[in-house]
Length: 172
Image 1 (cartoon, rainbow, N blue to C red):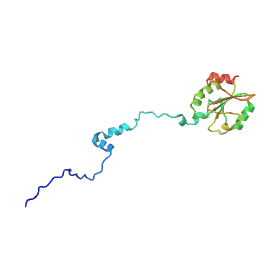
Image 2: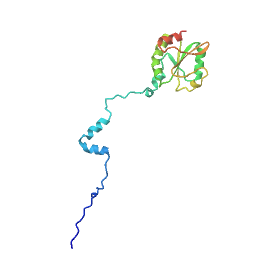
Image 3: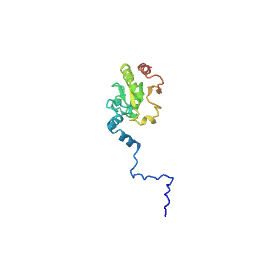
């Protein structure tokens, strides 16, 4: 008896794969460059030479309490504003917010103008005094808002915010 020759199958025999897990791309990259691993971590870190800037909102509130220097009166409530209106016929009111950049720029101008003028300057912090937004006398729509109080009541200043403009407003 003769045996028939074995016929080879045309489909290739599949090899079984090992049960190991496939690794992600990032771990494969690290494996390839295992010597440079510490260098890659250093690039991701921020360099210690960078200076951290303080945002205007992070400035401590004590810088804004003495708004405009010693010659500027701070108003804490509406009764204090009414007392000021009864004692002084003419004064300039500045409503500011400590986080406002324009208010911070105006602070030095107000200080210089208050030193040169005989008219009193008054500052109101809108964040600490919520009554400002509901006040009948003051129409605050933005910061800083500058008012002039005279015999006719409160009038909004629409001019510039320089020292000379504030002096002309105070001496009208």
